[in-house]
Image (cartoon, rainbow, N blue to C red; front, side, top):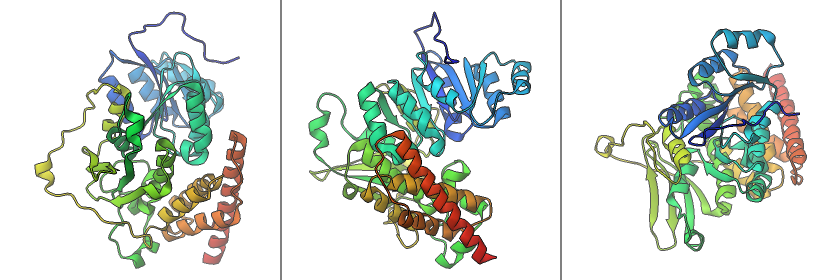
Length: 409
């Protein structure tokens, strides 16, 4: 029997908001926006992996009905500490509780902000339950694009992208009764990329960069894993795959352009030569507010954009010699099947190894390429096959990292 029971009486003025990954940067921004609109949203559930102290502080502030620690087993001591702090929520443990809160009848809107493959199952559960899903977790579409989009369609879920790039594309596309014919007039999508902290660093210096240097993003405040993905531009490769599924667009019609100022978040070009862009300061509260309020516009708390102060906007094509991870992502997308799941899994292992000091920065794409070369892509028609491809990619990457460490020793 589920630990989540529907509330007998409920204030229907507000929508129940579940934040998967509440202690991360996207979670913090989501709660900031939601707190500005208490007449619209009430916090149903907040989740974290093992960050009990950080989650407890959020529960004191926002008083959700449920809190979930997915990476911890049942603990009476943790329960006591939550109660002593004044948390009135019910505390749940384990990964299955993520799926329960995401699919609960009292959870109307689900922010999917868990980083990595761990976010796939609860995000899929929210989609299958017909929720409004605010998708900040790239991996749900990268690993299981067809499966996820089928779940959205079959359950009548509402899928709104939160990545600043995909949200920008969504805003630049037509909506409403005349949308479908106009989508045929889209020539291409251009995803912008900052280029990260190493855009102009001499190539011969990249082998020696440190994790702290890789995580020092010039424009955005992000977690360490996502920051490294930005430095390698794997984040943009994952976004290309995500855009393919979100917007039903062939790889050849999805392009990446480096835009160091991170003011234009993406563009859509139409067949008549018109190009529409979405601009804002680099603040995740902008796409979050757009998705929370859609189709209305609500205050995000972000600073207004001052074009005069910016002065100029610049663009350049990405150098695939500097950013080989981007080319690997395109290759995995074209191969299809489980290739993207293998790509994502190997990247997670490689980045984790780099952050732990076991792997050089320039070895990250080598680990990923070795996994794509050695692991059969296979079909991914259900969640089990997706997770199997993920496991094969991880095993290959772990083995490759071990061999590289042995050679270095």
